[in-house]
Image (cartoon, rainbow, N blue to C red):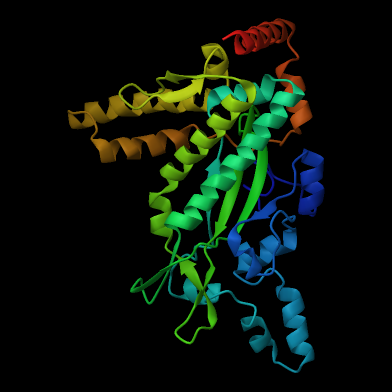
Length: 348
């Protein structure tokens, strides 16, 4: 609720989620996925605060209040009525075994840096095309996860079956923790899916979350390819390789987007790389050798945590765009670059 449904900020105590989203200029979450029929949800409909509390907070049906009330009216005892709204095992039983319930996975989709620049500094038409391509690329990545990756597991993993029907709550954010413009969507994939038991009856189970996690990079790569392809086709652009990390595969960025603009939109990455350089040097001093692959991953995690900013006040998109172009020289530079890009687009 704090880190996803309401940007990266903190809403005032006592304020409803919807009111906080409206005040911050954030759109409400929306339901996605083929698995929405099972919990009685509709694709594209708004994610309410109560649905979030029930589904992701308690592991219960998003319409649990109505179901429970109906059963109580029919004479069921409270414990039975509540159990009927559970999607799989009660969370308190999982916690009683000293385990942490895993309710959802957060798959975050964001364009590469040059497309963020186009979205943040482009005109209204370019921004609309950018956001439409972003949404279609997310839909394609989720469909691939449903068709090729998602599986449900039971009996401690001994039973498995494909489950091409996920329940996803998607939340749109417009900036990062530094307050810089960053279009991205958090897609909360519910760790609850329906399957048919041996008698052909629908039962709720868990996803094979390890399998999903192993394919997170592939899903992100498919998203990037789909979005970049549509943007280039719609706006007549081309891509060029850009080396982000020496020795690793380059990132394809939009041609003619100035490297200084890309670096400006990637301040977080630069701070992580600076911190990682210091941690790598200390590791080499302590161990007498450079870190291996496993140690590099660990150092990267520490660098990201050490440079992670505190929560900030979420700003509406209009205010973010105004902030970017407020400085006169910066604004003139962006206008010149944008004019050159448009010229290159139609003459190349």
